[in-house]
Length: 446
Image 1 (cartoon, rainbow, N blue to C red):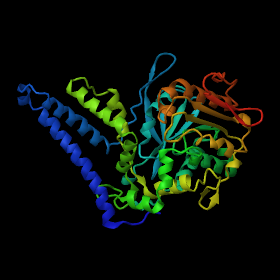
Image 2 (tube, rainbow, N blue to C red; image 1 turned 45 degrees about the horizontal axis):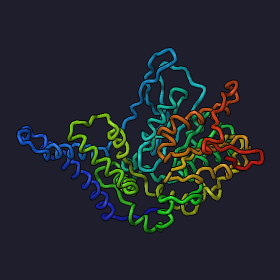
Image 3 (cartoon, one colour; image 1 turned 180 degrees about the horizontal axis):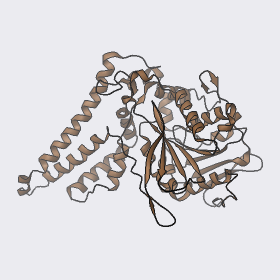
C-alpha cells in the first residue's frame, strides 16, 4: 500500500535519527560539563541545573532506541517460596514471537491466558505490570511484536491480515483452554481471529475473549485519535508519515511508520502534562532528590521506548478499521475470505472500557457484544470503569483493584472442568454503573 519514496524517505528517517542522536549527545555533554569538579567552587545553581538537564535529556533520548527488558519479579507461592520467572519464546516468527512466562518449580495453573499486546508504537513490555499481576493466578503468554526497522525486506509484508493470521496461529498452538485478553489496538483483530477459528476450526477456538479498550467501532464515540484518521486522507498519511528505514538497521529499505513519529503524536496529545513532568524531574535532579527507580524514570523509560511499524500495517489499520469500519460492519476479510463474527457461538465475550478513556472512548469496545450475535446473552459481559483512562484499565490502579478480579472471575465461569465457579465480584447498582450485564431481554442494562 505504501509507495516507494526513494532517497527522500531514507533522508527523512535519518534526519529524525540524527535529531535524536544529537540531543542524546547534547545531554551527555551538559551532564559531564555541569558535573565538572572545578565548578563546585562557584556557588551558582546554573551548573547543577545544567547537569540535571543533561542527565534527564541523555536518558530520555537514549531510551528511544532501546527495547526494555521484561524484568518480571519472582512470584511468591502460598508456602512463601520465591519462584523465578523465565521469559521464553514459545513460537518464533519473522514479525513477532509468542512468549511464555515460565514460573520455575510451579505446576501448570488452571487458567491459561494469552495477552495480545498492541502494535501501536510501543513494545509489548508496556504490559509488564499486567503480566506481573496475572502471573500469580495464571499461566501467561504474550505476543511480542518485533521492531520493523530490524526486519529485512526479504521477510515480506505484514499488514492487519497477516497480524490476524499470527493470532490464529498463536491461539491454535496454545489450545482451546486458552483465555485471550486483547488490549487496545488488537481488540478488533483478536475478535476476527476468534471468528476464523470458530467457523473453520471450532476445536481450536479459545474459551473466552476479553477485549480491553479496543476500537471495535471507532465511530461509536469520537476521540482525537479517530477524528485524525477521518480527517486525513490515505494519500496524506502515506506522504507525511511513511518513511524508509535507513542503512543503519537490518530493515534498510523497508517502508515504515517510525516509532519516533508516533511518539511525537503521543506527546503532542498531552504536551503540557509531559512538559511539567520533565521540568519537575530536572529540578528534582538538581536538588539531589532524583533516584534511578522513581516514578518518572519508571514511567518514561517505558513510554519513550518506541518501535517502528510496517507501513502496510499502519495504513491498512487506519483505512480498514477506522475509515471503512470493516470490523464494525462485519465486513472484514482475510486472504479474500469474509470473516463472519456471527459465527462465534461457544466463546464467552467480555468488554472493558474506561469512562475517561480519550483514545478508545466508551462505546467503541462494547460494540463487539452486538456483533457477536451468535453468543448467548448469558455469556456476554461488559464492564465500565468510572474515572479510568486508557492506561488505567489494563495497568493502573483501576486494573489492580477492580478490573483484574472481574476478569479472573469471568475466566473461572467459563472453565467447565475447574469445579464450582468462584463468586462473581459484581458491583452494586449504586457503584456508578461500574458493571454492565445483559438483562433477560438481551439488552444492555446498567
